[in-house]
Image 1: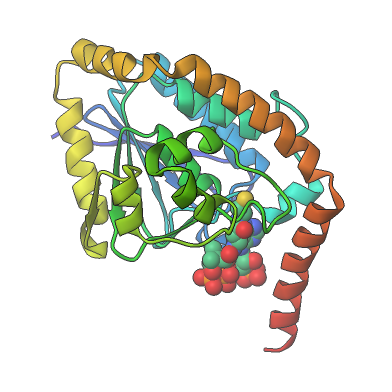
Image 2: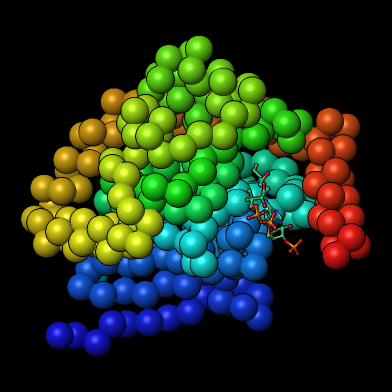
Length: 267
Ligand code: COA
């Protein structure tokens, strides 16, 4: 068997995005477990670059996304939102969203623990999603003074109907993998201990298929809504950037930081 190729992408001192490639599968691991893999600007930058490079490479037939430490991702780092908020479509988060919504290479995800915000919405652009039984999905945009992103305002009501989507996007109700399965956001729900191996097996099975046919099939499945999704991304993005500057959002981020520091003070 070939030795796996391993490289680390350093966005700070720590390898917060860890990429390994073996047998045509590029495994991209969100590796910031002490912060529940919350995404910083640097991580988005690296992720966008990794997806673009994977798409241009003949060696990569499938991309597999997963998180380290039993968590998929807690979504955007809330401190980062305050320190360096995205300002437009050139910002790292939007480059990542354009990359994941446009990638022609098939993408598989292994999801467990928390999948918050973009940790849920990105899955609507992934081809095969395996969720562990313990996964908690959440879309707390309104509670954060924000609004939906990643075309979720378009896709979620279509997937589950307006009334059920409103409970998730407006009330911000957390939901489990059975709701996500029902809505077609996940492919199947598997025991926690098996989620990585099931996702890896699916990624390897895809990588063994005729690549041209596979990419063509994905392209055909995705093409009919592509323009609409890109329009939704842009329009939501403009609203999101405006909301980030709102007093509502600033108060919500400050409250999160305050909760963290008081819980530490109380220890
Ligand atoms: N941004 C920044 N830091 C985050 C974070 C985020 N989105 N999510 C978690 N963290 C940090 C916590 O501040 C904590 O760091 P600390 O120990 O230095 O204080 C660490 O990750 C562990 O988080 P904790 O809340 O103790 O873990 P938990 O298992 O109890 O809860 C979550 C996990 C994901 C449910 C919870 O952290 C959470 O709700 N995070 C915010 C999610 C969010 O609103 N994301 C933005 C979506 S747009």
